[in-house]
Image (tube, each protein chain N blue to C red):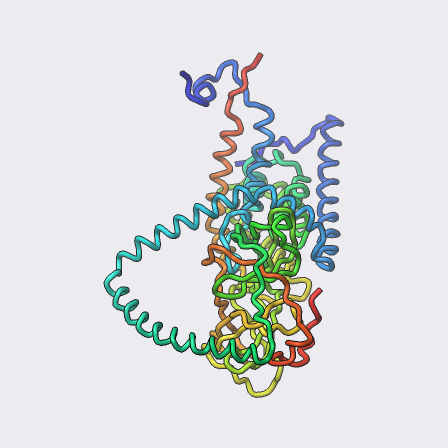
Length: 299
Length: 180
């Protein structure tokens, strides 16, 4: 159909002016938007107060839905668990037998570890978590990967703190408002985490690709020693992320590194933990750190 | 005992649409579309189409001139508060989109379903591409195929978004204010 002709302002001066000013402001809007865009590309924290206030405003609704979602997922898991209970039972029994043996071994290792640490005079560095909260939203239609955390400055969260789940590293706090915080997930394209291979400490960086995977770049170039299934943990170089937090498993090897899957998929985590920022202590930084990684120290 | 809206649905004489509702509904629906990041869906890659933008284009096609040409500026600002894009990205894209839609309408005054779907899909595609470009402007590297899933979803959902906005348009014009 043809559009209504209410755009034609006719001979009324007032209507003509209204139309003209509409176009003028529309064009100005594009220019203002472009200017703000350039500012915020060079200064990503631009307007973070406004963003924080906006996120705070909708956070109560998001939290309620997040709780409901966690409950309903639990229900689905319970029902689907019944469907193959027999097979699963056999599997679990076998796994428990194996796990019991492993547990004894682990106990022995823990004891040895404690003894060696006391010999070295090291403190056991397990800091108290700052806060435990739900991730209550994420930028699901943007190519940047940010999540909203349901705890903010009021709970003691501050910028730069690493966020982890029981499985592994999730991201770090980028902006904080009163009751929420914006978390940059490790899969974001601007997130870079210093990592090392868990079994032998091959150092590298894990950079997000925006699609749920990480690009592992090795520091020592040459023959690529990575294999499918290698596990990476944070190395703690440069501070910020505590060492030995699991982060990714190699999925495919590339020329200069590997593409890795994130161990702790933030979508599966009910709660995440905000840890205090980790700082490299001069006394304890010498053992297994990757030397001279070029990473700037924590702000 | 009267049910809610019974008056609005049955009585036509001596009733008029409320001017506040008639004006506010398009703005509110577009803002609700922009609030998708408040849904507790922790996506590991962009999966949801830009609902706010799609609703804006749909309103523009259903009721040309209802949202003013400059509506992209305030609505884009609201979208920027939640979307995770660099601030100003939606303000720029949405403002330009409103002007482009005006030009398209002047150029092709006779329209049909397929043409509107095509225009809506193309606009959304450009919006997504430009958004991805702006998001990576500060040196990040993401594979360009990243926006393919949400683009596909956006194209498929566009007619539905139009239907939804048409439903809201009927609600907008319900006659529930008494004429004195």
